Length: 94
Image (cartoon, rainbow, N blue to C red; front, side):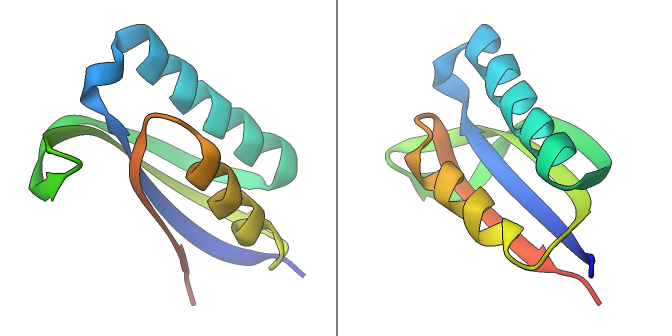
């Protein structure tokens, strides 16, 4: 049974444009292969609400997807081990 989820991740803006595009593509591909990607919205570079690791700017990406309930844990695991990701959150939608 598929459930709906939403995720936002923030990429360190200091990794460069090429690396940012590569990270967005990596997670887009992961969502397309392991889940049903409904939409992906790149908000672009924005000021952070508070400093994270001495950074005050990040590249925001929002994605909506449907997947099996076990997939978000795997997505979070990959976020944790991916260099360049400042923050992330995965939310189950009703």
